[in-house]
Image (cartoon, rainbow, N blue to C red; front, side, top):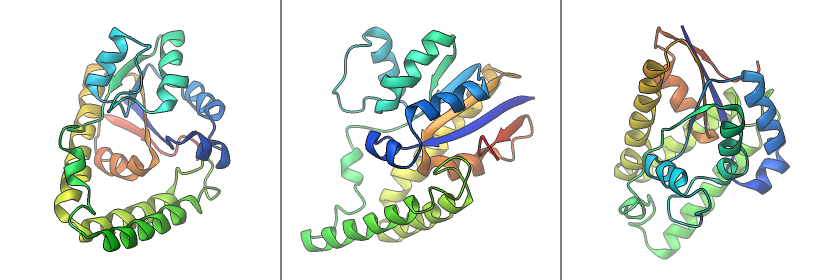
Length: 213
């Protein structure tokens, strides 16, 4: 049986400190889980770029700050294998902005409503043992993306549905390659529920989410 954990984080350093999901706490959770493998929200091409030149930063599609500041160095220190699982077609990503078809006034109103959804998500931070990892956060997150789907179904299909199909398949491939090992998936917290729902029926996986009950 392969053990698979899901840990949702925020990519914003300020929000990490504000909502008690600091890099120190993330490291504590990683070491407590004791993975053999970390699957990260990193593009395969960006991982290859990192392997070629770990100092190269500032490019479109680069990994989020927690990878540079914690996860990559920790993988090297502890000899964790790293598997990049993200999928984004960078050359057309902005063409699928869900608010692109609307005029400036409409876009502003939609962005304001999106910010309200985000604040509702953050308001749940203290309802679970790990901030942003639990039923309350996931419930509002699902509602937010259902709203975005109504706003622009095509953008939702490209940016969310297709992306998750590929991320989940890459995780499944990792579980086959590392069968019987402990695998930790670290992603932005908005992905938590989609990964859980896409993996929970896999009979060869013991799925752990949240990492602390």
